[in-house]
Image (cartoon, rainbow, N blue to C red; front, side, top):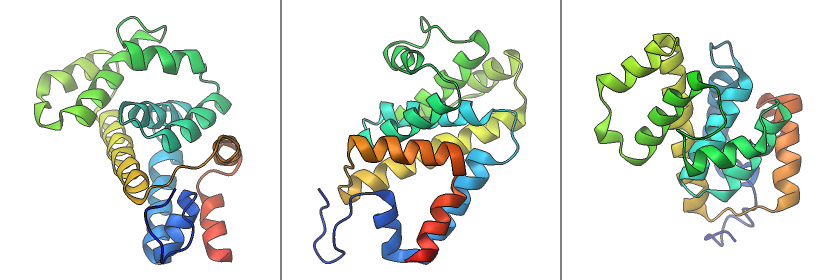
Length: 182
């Protein structure tokens, strides 16, 4: 349930973005660049990280949508549940674990970032560009979680499934087209 009365119902990110279409379009363009353009991190991995960060922040709206999207890109939903419980024992590729440990600390205690965390990621075989891309995903979803929660956007199970599938099929440019229609 939206916290605002004058904007009309804000039941989805699209509704929220329509309040300021220019900022909304810029934000969706940023999503497209961060989550769909070329990166060492696959699209599925980036969507998985988006869902993971949102789960850490208890943002059900973003967690659910990006879990559906990550699953559509081949990520097992049980793996996401497992990493939220404990990264070290989760059934996930060892190379991905330092990325998730970094994402968790950047989300929960950003002032504790240090060189050894980057070194762990690099030692696992990732490039500095992959770390840069990871930071963008983590930062974007910390922002989005606060944007959604701050406005009181809650969504519904059917919306989560529909949006997650649409993000898989059309990417973020599909949402940009919806903004231009209104």
